[in-house]
Picture 1: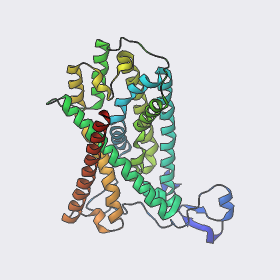
Picture 2: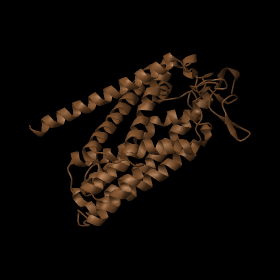
Picture 3: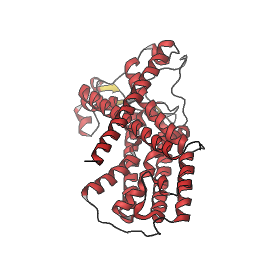
Picture 4: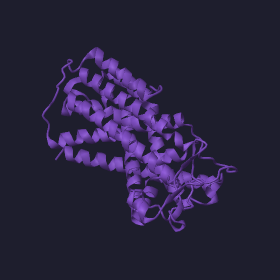
Length: 357
């Protein structure tokens, strides 16, 4: 490797820990032939939050298990509620294979995101990754896609919250895990589907396509992974965070989908909490209130932070506690949640019109 082809990027191991300071990779033709990506132009770029030694606001504070809990809350929250209906649409065996197969794929792609982040430590969001891949065009394309996905996800939380308000008035407990356990017990006792399970079913292309997208949505937390890795105290611990997430969500998806579908049958509701009796449904929705709210807030937080970092990256505003920083953050959040609410209202209006057509 010639001196002209040297540049700084990615981690090397010093004392058992990755270090970005002295990592060098070849940039010459020989290295490109070995399949190494061209990272010229990213030398000197540091992580998005810089040196936080004397910062008023510190971002890189999460342990790997804390990040895992946040990722579980963000990923499992709503997707799990639609999976029993997937089995009702495509059949028990194809549905379970879909959930397991896409879970393995989500683990692989999540691990790849971690490798990409370690290679380019300055990446904080999909826009930064898009810039590495496709330049300025990629930054804008990936950034717009990330914001759209997050805002529509926020809208889905608003919609689920609305459904919950129509079901329960004053019940409020702790988590989505307790909610689905209550639902499984409720449908196990009442057996609204008679315990009949179809190994396979015949469904239209549209129905099967929607079922597959429901499973994909259940694993769609990857859009926020770059942000979570950026806020780890030790980014090299990310694989443990990922395996915690994927182990928990894939296991829960398989168990909840199988049990609720087993006892609810083809008439299973989506969200699945509605498959239980009215009283049990009220209890389940009440228990799910915190998760419906918290997971929506996490998605809104990631979307707002993308805009905030995009606006103030490299400036003192990133680490200051001031009226301007608080006001800007609040305004960004207000605009995003307003847009999400408008999307939900428009979607409900269009659906109500189509019902009568």
